[in-house]
Length: 159
Ligand SMILES: [Zn+2]
Ligand SMILES: [Zn+2]
Image 1: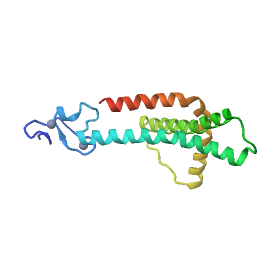
Image 2: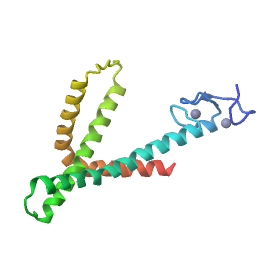
Image 3: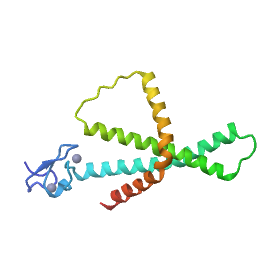
Image 4: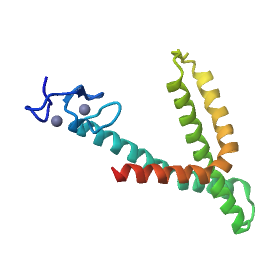
């Protein structure tokens, strides 16, 4: 079989996403092999995830400040309290994303097939536990998370 893009070149592999036959040049030298279209699509998807995450940080920070302003403080607190609250809100997002990626990687690395029970109460409890955990570890993780996102972004833009 020959390459989908180059009818005269023998195919060496298939795109792992759309199953198109690919020659060595067209396989992007990636593993698993991807055609140009699928490669671009995945890259765009990854970039979009970064943009969305970056948007979530200030939103969460602002929401926590707003909540504290309207529900907790009777008089105007000092400005630095808002800065800490803003950081706190953003750090929940960082912790949440970290836990999500951590558990995804663990699942990908284990050979066991996990059958999930779709019990809404357990799912909700799991999310609550995750939220509490995220707010605890996120406080320390936020700078590292932002650094990692920046690295990921540059890597995606590079190739
Ligand atoms: Zn493809
Ligand atoms: Zn080709």
